[in-house]
Amino acid sequence: MNGTSRAANEAALRRYYRFHARIYDATRWAFLFGRTALVDAISRHAPAPRNILEVGCGTGRNLQVLGRCFPMAQLHGVDVSSAMLAAAGRRLGAAGPRVSLTEAAYDRPLAEPHRPFDVVLFSYCLSMINPGWQEVLRTARADLAPGGLLAVVDFHHSPSAGFRRWMGLNHVRMEGQLLPVMEREFTPVERRMTPVYGGLWSYFAYLGRPGDKGPCPPEDAPPGLIPAR
Image (cartoon, rainbow, N blue to C red):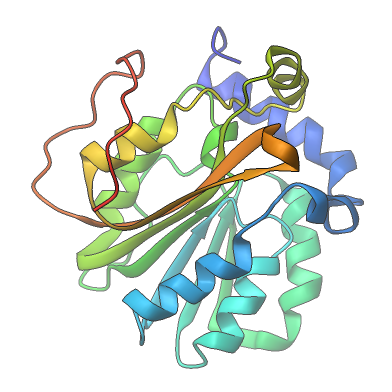
């Protein structure tokens, strides 16, 4: 997806999820590791968040878990796919006014004036925003309260060129591009890298706080892993 525009990427994702929304929860358990562990990590570093945003909320699985963990929090989900949001609405209907779902690209801050988000969560989302994922990180930083928490779990890298190409057909870029930039844009508080399926690929979990880090480097900046703090 590197040679396309952001609008074209969003349109491609909408088409992709028109079908995959129907099978998403039944199939992604074999790929999307670390989601529940990320919520546990949020509990350690943000024990009483009142305002939580998930970008790329999909079928609402993470919002449902967050709602159980943080019963006083307002939960907000944004996604470009109406099909995925329809599934999320069915899953989260009982939560009532605690949950709001918005069909939109995350191309501008969504926090209300004087009510920034305590947590902004990305779960296997950033690796599918190509191009534009660095602008999305800037938007998240603008949406976070001082001392708020960025929480990300996502694909990192695969040593297999064939597997990377196959994932690319499913709109996923996994070239180790995400983590180095996040660690330059945010102050890390927790970081974990985990290989799966005998090292076929690895995923990471990352939590960080906004700080005076300056702007994100260009999207073609060379990666360089930064040791966890």
